[in-house]
Length: 368
Ligand SMILES: Cc1cc2nc3c(=O)[nH]c(=O)nc-3n(C[C@H](O)[C@H](O)[C@H](O)COP(=O)(O)OP(=O)(O)OC[C@H]3O[C@@H](n4cnc5c(N)ncnc54)[C@H](O)[C@@H]3O)c2cc1C
Image (cartoon, rainbow, N blue to C red):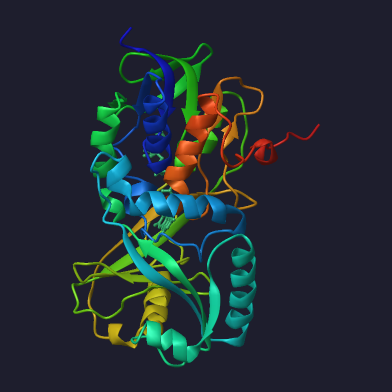
C-alpha cells in the first residue's frame, strides 16, 4: 500500500504544493514528488511581488482571491509564513508611451475587478516620496504587496506533512506508464491520478503521455542590494513591465523585471546576462534616485513558464483521463495557491468557484 496513491503530483513548486495540500485535505492519499528540494525553482527564487498591476486582466479574479490567501497564509498553512506584506502598488510612467500603456492596462484590470486608479505625479510622489519627480502618472492599487519567496517551501512543508502528503524530494520522475506507474530513480510509484506541476518542465512532462504542448521559458534575472535605511514604502513597477522594486523588512531592495538572462531550458546552461542586468539597475536608479549609491550584493535567475496567450495551463490533459496540468500562469506566484485550490476542488469532483483554463489551445498539432 505504501506506494499506491489516489493522486501523484509531480513538481513541488507553489502550484504542486497547493494542489497536493488541498487534495489531501479533501481526503485523498497524495504523493508529491520533486527532482530537487521543495520550492527551489521558480517558486523559491522569484521576486515575490503579490500584484494586481502586473497580472493579466483575465486572471484578476483569481489573483485577488490568492492575494487574500497569501496575506493570511499562517491560517491555512498551519502557521507557515511567507512574510507577506501589504503595500500600496504603483505602476509608473515616465514617457507618453508608457502613460498610454498604463491607462489602458489600468482600465482593463479595473473592469476585471482590481481596485486600480490612475493618479497624477503629485499623488504618486505623496504615496512614494522617494519616487523620481519626473514621473508623469501612475497606476495605484492599494492592495499590492510582496512575500519572501525563499520562505515558500519552509512554509508549505509542515502543512503538507500534517495533511498526510507523502513528500518525496530528490525524486525526479523519469516517465509515467499507463495505470499509472511513475518511474523514478527509487521504487516505482502507483497512482490512480496524476497532476503535472512542472513549471517550465511541463512540456516534457506532457510528452510522457504522448501530448505535445508548447510552453515558453523566460529566464528572469533579479538583483538585491545591501541592507539600506528605508528608501521606499510601495511596490513599484514601470508600466513597460521592465522593472519591479520593493524593500524588504531587513532593508534590502530587490530589483526585478523583464530583463532576460541567456541559455536554454533543455540544453543549458542558463546564465545571468550582465548587460541586461545593468539596464535593469539603471532603470531602478532612475525610478528611485536614492538607490544610486546602493551596493548590489547578489544576482540570480529563475525560469518562468509562459504560454503563447499568457494564460495558464490548468485543466485536464487532452485525451488522457485522470491526468491534469497546472502552471504557466503569468504572475504565477501571486495566483499560485488559489489555482492549486481550484484544481484540487475540480479533481475532488466539486464545482470549481471559477473556470479552469482548458489546455487544448496549447496543443502542438502535427502537419498532416
Ligand atoms: C525570477 C522570477 C521572478 C518572478 N517574479 C514573480 C513575482 O514577483 N510575482 C509573481 O506573481 N510571479 C513571479 N514569477 C513567476 C512565478 O515564480 C511562477 O509563476 C511560479 O512560481 C510557478 O510555480 P510552479 O509551481 O508552476 O513552478 P516551479 O516553482 O518551477 O515548480 C516546478 C517544479 O517541478 C519540478 N520538476 C521538474 N521536472 C521534474 C521531474 N521530472 N520530476 C519531479 N519534479 C520535477 C522542479 O524541480 C520544480 O520544483 C517569477 C518567476 C521567476 C523565475
